[in-house]
Amino acid sequence: MSSGEVDISTPGGAGAQTRPRRHHFAFGDPLFRWFTIACAATVALAMFLLIGVLVKNSWLAIHVLGIKPLTHVAYNPDTNQYGALSSLFGTFLTTILAMLIAVPLALAIALLLVELVHPLVSRVVGTTIEMLAAVPSIIFGMWGIFIVVPLMQRHIEPWIQATPLGRLGIFGGSPVGVDVFTASIVLSLMILPFITAVSRDVLQMVPKVVKEAGYGMGSTTYEVMRKISMRYALAGIAGAVFLGLGRALGETMAVSMVIGANFFTIPHSLFQSGTTVSATLALNFPESQSKLETSSLIELALILFVITMVFQVVAQLWLARARRMTGSRA
Amino acid sequence: MTATTTDLSRCPMAPRSVRRRRLVNTVITTSSWIAAAIGIFVMGWIVVTVVVRGIGAWNVAFFTQLPPTGNDPGGGLANAIVGTLVITFGAAVVGLPLGFFGAIYLSEFGRAGRVATGIRAVTNIVLGVPSIVAGMFAYALLVLPSHHYSGFSASVALAFIMLPVMTRTAEDVLNLVPNELRESALAMGAPRWRATLGVVVKAARAGLITGAILAVVRVAGETAPLLFTALSSPYWLSGFFGPSGYFGGPTANLTKDIYDFSQQPYPHLIQLAWGGSLLIIVAVLGVNVVTRLLFQRGKEW
Image: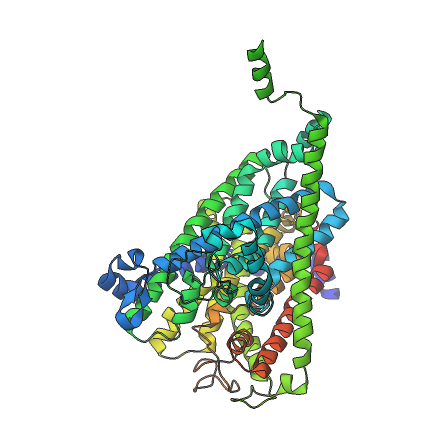
């Protein structure tokens, strides 16, 4: 304390103190800068390492099986069949169904949060729904297999079959509960909070003036939402949808627990068990016996990575466009 | 005459029945209330289910004993609790500092430059990598060459998931720090690194801590990346190398135990699985709520 005062009051002392210090710290800045660059670069390094490692380990399968997995349904290591079509079909089917349920729900909730309720209520409701995103996949799986599956099997699926809808082929067969339908519903609830949060954020970026102009013209809340906000935030909402899509494609635990898994067929009915890429990986990989099977499953993981990467890139492009159009950085 | 009326009805400004428009509006607003109610109801349903089914499993044995072997009732998940803590800690030690300093580069040095934009894009892609693919990556990278599963490989998989989460949230928080703070620190003659760590980071610490905690909690509940890496083990984690060490062999963890026990036909194992689920949901949701309440300030500048 007192020595500091002395330094400042006597010019000679201060100069003598700062000169060596400044010299010493001259290395500090470049060093710090390069250190942070190195840290930032690890994520890129990790991704290239991931691609490299997955390609290297699936090389055997790519070499031996060629494109056969992409054209064959059956997966049976005992007979050397490594078809991936049933898994891919299941992944896309559950994802599309989950999106069909989750997107309208998420948009409706976002409308409520942005336009209809008091900001305080909006915050409480919004946080509760965000909490749904924090619930781990395995918990959804436990809830799904012990609560939702019996409910589906005993009540909801027989009920659907009793209605005129039941005559449709897609609701045929005996209700088992562990099926594509249940998996899609659980999946939709898992991605709901993500789509809701992002659409709420982009809808909030719509300038007030634009909406007020709509209200001033005598539009109803729905009309302002539909014809002004949604149009203004369209790119952002598309980004939100693709983000949800990417999540749904890779979701593993809950889906593998309720879809029945290891049924390598193309299901004719939604009430039939099936499998997805991630469920196939989760259930077969730890038990894989031969090098070829391991390799073919790593190839499946690589395919899943490429698919989600494509959707992620599309989502980012749309969101970036939304940001440019609305001129916000949020 | 008729042609004009048809044209008019197609025109966006065509007069429409006010009653109909009001009805549509009511239907849509009501359904958005219903949608929110569904979301909240599901959240409540899951929490209540886990609490009701899991609370019965919580006793002293649950927190202190090894899982039962075979048909014996009793036992606990103590080794899995320890394993999950160790694996998550290992992931945090790697993932958090890398994400933190990476974010400093993006927000303080890289900004809108080409390198930073590229790294940001890659970060977003890694953010979207399915967790099971991250597990497969750690398996192919560490388990295959070393010929044994390990808790360490699980930590690597989790760090891979944690890294982009931490980078993105930390960058967002650092970007909220007003530029005046940086400028005044530099004007005082502070070198860049001191201005960053002593002023910018200090100003943003509430948000950074929140981000770090949420990133850790998020991976703590992961299961898929552990399936091919930590596997599971009926034994205590002991030491580092050796067959039941962190680097040397399968490591017990909560989520994989929940998954395994839920597939068993024995009620007492399923009970344990619910007990584990309760512990995870209490930890994850509890930490989420508490950090949000404590550090909410960090969000509003």
